[in-house]
Amino acid sequence: MAYAGYLIRINGTTNYNIPMEYMRKETYKCTFSTLDTETYRDGNGMLHRTAIIRIPHCSFETRKLNNTEISALWQAIQSRYTVAMEKRVSASVYVMEIDDYITGSFYIPDTEMIIDKIENGKIFYMPVTFEFIGYGG
Image 1 (cartoon, rainbow, N blue to C red):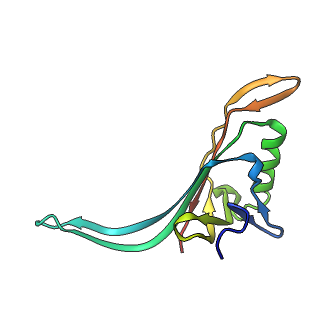
Image 2: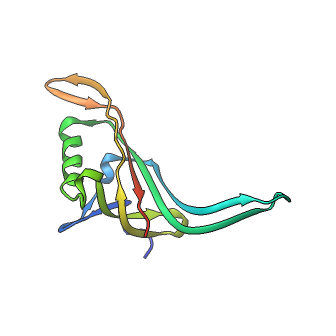
Image 3: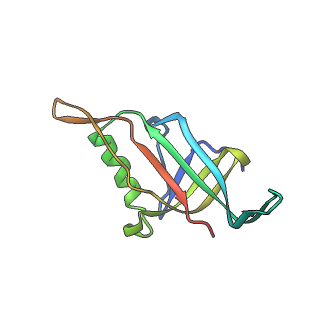
């Protein structure tokens, strides 16, 4: 399919493309990781791998957002959780290695937010790193 104008889409009854204006695009990373089982080096130093699956792991950093913007972003993501306790979503992520999207289940690990300043009744946050880690399968 190739790049279609978004980097991460959260799928749901209605899909939500994470707004590009919230992202620092130069921080977007999406690694297509290979997971192995029973990997070892033999007595001759030869590596033996049993690759079992490739799983995307994507992240990006926001620009500085205020509390209204960060709340809207979180609300749009949380309303599409497929398993709320796991912070699990169905998403389509752009993987540079294949110049295409992978759709699957991802979880969002704990996300730290740091206040930059409070001004005129608004909270402004330092850039926030969001991660989407594939479940596989």
